[in-house]
Image (tube, rainbow, N blue to C red; front, side, top):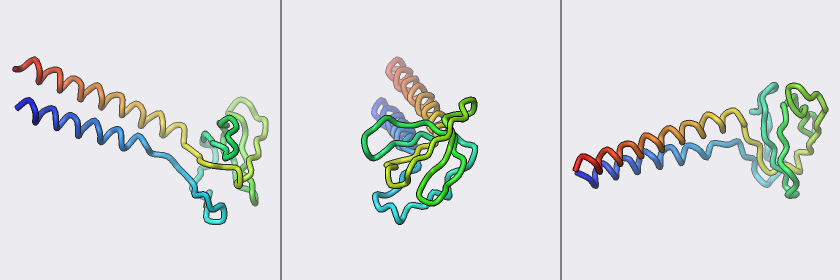
Length: 120
């Protein structure tokens, strides 16, 4: 009985951990990248290829070989990032939701394991 509950909770936890890897990534081949799935008005975290600091931008549009946005909702400083310097783009709001789901799932799995250990 103890092993089956532990196995179920482990599978439940691993499901949440796997789902936490949700991100929008682009390939190394710049010609194949299609940035049309980025939504204007959403905040994204852009990781550059050159190893410099990640940038959080409020995405506006794609103009030729550049991604254009602003530093945030309150800061209207324009940010222009060349597509050739982008390693990955992550949706910050989606990452928060998935992170919260992982945390709740892990707490639930821990509660199941603890309750099953006390039942014996």
